[in-house]
Amino acid sequence: MMSPRTRLLSVLTAAFMVLVWVTRIRNAAADDSISTATRTGAYALSAAGLVGAVLLLVFAARRSRPIWAVLVAGVHAVVWAVRGLQIALGPRPVGFKVVHVVLALVAIGLAIAVARSTRSHRSAVSLSAAP
Image (cartoon, rainbow, N blue to C red; front, side, top):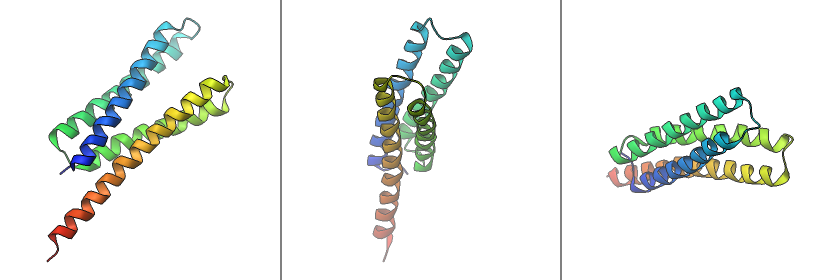
């Protein structure tokens, strides 16, 4: 069963994901300089991110097993770790790089927080169950 702390962190992670991926959809739609393939890729990745956000909210609402929240937040962190590195090493303006590296660090930090919250909850449950 998901702890209240894991539920809160899952909801915060989902909100962050919605903010990021809706913004990406808006930016891709407004950018006339990108190809159709690039725009389609942006939409597909954004849709996957939004599905992940919805899953996190469903897991939190149902108080599902916390491993599912860890999995979704972890996949999101991996996406951002890869994408953040690509952006940081690519030919982009410094401001763009800084913003995206910060977004990557937030995604990774949230995933770590979700994972740690499940570990501390398990420890508390096993201690309370001890004779």
